Image (cartoon, rainbow, N blue to C red; front, top):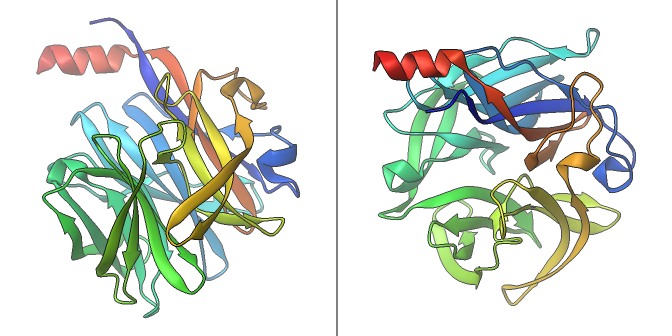
Length: 281
């Protein structure tokens, strides 16, 4: 049981015109503290404010919980993270979106529960209730909803490395499920689908050789549920320039909002607190 362990950290910057396609500089790392680390950042704009949702992997309980912070424009910084959802199993990848009914939903990774489900915001951003089970008796990770040609879809990865395309009804019930690929250079999503220069962009984790090694920004279209795609740019951790930290060893998430861009980065760090907690257990 060594002191040096794999950890993740979140970094952000004000949005650049060319996004990561043209510029990977000026990211600022958010301090983890000593009780765990943050990953899977998602930005969400609501009533003039930008919120940052993330996983916090807690050394105290040995699993992920979901947290939220709010951006301060004047200070160019985020508030302290606040825990918003904790379950008896690991949670991560807090994908937040607005439904057709105007409600705000979250579809997190909850594969240890053998379910894919939704939370609904009762009082945004910190009060949520479990709303609907989308899939049960299945273990999937990093499910990523998106709209395409007025239809509702999601990319999702089964733990046997099967990338699926889920099609939803307007009430978010599953209409269809299609196998796409088991190529781990793009099968696992790493952020929200977005548009850039007239293309639909899918953020994919490059997991073929190493989990969290890099991300691929992929242009795609769906023709008869066939995933036609090409890699526009690969972002390696050594490409990312940080104004307050050294180069990282990995990267696996990228998201953006109206004002900001956010990524997470892998580091290997010493943790005396984690060792102490394990000894006490």
